[in-house]
Image 1: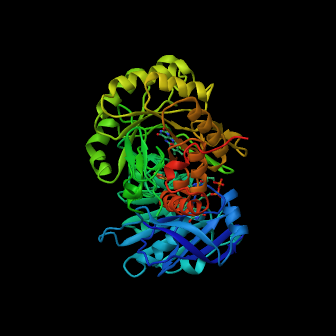
Image 2 (image 1 turned 180 degrees about the horizontal axis):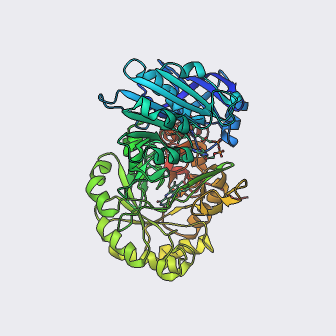
Image 3 (image 1 turned 90 degrees about the horizontal axis):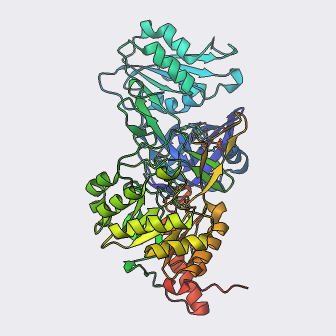
Length: 250
Length: 306
Ligand SMILES: Cc1cc2nc3c(=O)[nH]c(=O)nc-3n(C[C@H](O)[C@H](O)[C@H](O)COP(=O)(O)OP(=O)(O)OC[C@H]3O[C@@H](n4cnc5c(N)ncnc54)[C@H](O)[C@@H]3O)c2cc1C
Ligand SMILES: Cc1cc2nc3c(=O)[nH]c(=O)nc-3n(C[C@H](O)[C@H](O)[C@H](O)COP(=O)(O)O)c2cc1C
Ligand code: FES
């Protein structure tokens, strides 16, 4: 996991408050879907963890929502031609077993972005069924990237695009038809809790990508732990960010 | 090439740059980014007698120019460190074991276990003393002297560095107290206690409420304290607090430090330490041409006050 002095190629809005950042690094690195990078924002002591959306040779794309001061500065003050420090690839990523062939992808909000990488990586090997939730029609982005599986259900909280309701609700409505061998999910904690309740008692492995505040991003500082059922504190940045939903306390 | 060697309590370091405790683990992860044998030494994560799970999350917050952390000393315990990490780390560079206790006897026992196995022991005295109402060992001079003495008594072979807390009543007095307790050297500063608030939720960001402040914003406070401490004692001082580049390190050396530690900047730039080492070499070469600085150790304490 090298540290790169990356060159920003593009940093543009793709939906209100959502930006796509593409940068070039000095060498080709193999990135698995679900892996992330730590993106430095000049003037801020902590880098921001962002999922890799696309890795094409030396070009890496991440998509981010403007939330606090760091992502706002990244969106408003930095553009093509500037350099930022980036550590990547980080974390374990989504790993599927060969016998896991029918895969449901459940994403909400910024949780959609790592799942785009999963769609790209698994599209020729697996049958993919996607359930992607956004706040409203304006927030829907990258829908062309989401369309590459067997099925895509877009959901919005207000019904202004696709079906009304959450991605978990849409997935549940389909679960008995689709009969997935595994689920890949990413989204806010309430969404993951709902998914946990919904899949309890069913024998389906659910792999979720967690969000936790980070400092080093590589496993050294123990800032980003989550509770595992076996009583061990796992590092989200190193042992995750992808965990089996039945192995963690949410 | 400038001579970057320094000597701290009889231990020869190839350069004065040391990653600070808690920001670097035991070095294994950073060694995947660069070969950590380039470092003067490594200060380990704080070691306790028994493994510790630490605080709930969030454990980290950011405020302009600084961060706050409340990791709560999560670590696998001193025994695990000795059995699993020490040999590997010593194969790389000099090892400074950072030691944290909840009682005086904890400090004594951890030091006894590490004696002769590591190059230096660094006492983290910013921990609450559970037998003394939870007040940190590093606040009052009499407590500093006592914890230093107990630790020094347990260390027959390895030199002892006491890491001073900036939350002390007086830095100069605590520096003298550590020296009187038998410290072979000092390091400073540990983090300052701070509070960061999520104004939407009207709650602290950190699960622990308060956290230790570190990073670029604390540097002037740290440099002042290093100056005061190093002028109060006759033992060597390691300076830290907000170092981001070679020029920052030079400030600490001039204020009286023999070596420096780099903490938060490892997060901002994982290559911070090797960059600072290279930058110090370059700075000395330029300074050599101008003022005849050939060796980095000649910079220590060269500040002239107005
Ligand atoms: C593995 C992983 C992948 C992620 N992928 C994406 C992504 O692809 N797109 C996206 O928009 N967001 C993603 N996030 C969330 C993203 O990291 C935060 O939204 C972002 O760090 C907030 O920074 P800020 O400057 O807006 O907020 P500030 O409030 O200024 O942040 C202060 C500090 O808190 C941290 N922080 C605040 N909120 C979060 C959060 N929800 N999760 C983690 N750290 C936080 C920041 O990193 C920073 O260290 C991911 C998080 C993780 C852990
Ligand atoms: C995440 C984190 C964990 C830390 N853990 C320890 C520790 O275990 N023991 C200790 O003595 N200091 C610890 N510190 C303090 C640092 O070693 C250092 O004294 C402080 O951060 C100031 O340096 P800086 O501004 O370069 O970070 C920690 C600091 C941070 C940011
Ligand atoms: S962020 Fe440092 S261990 Fe995960």
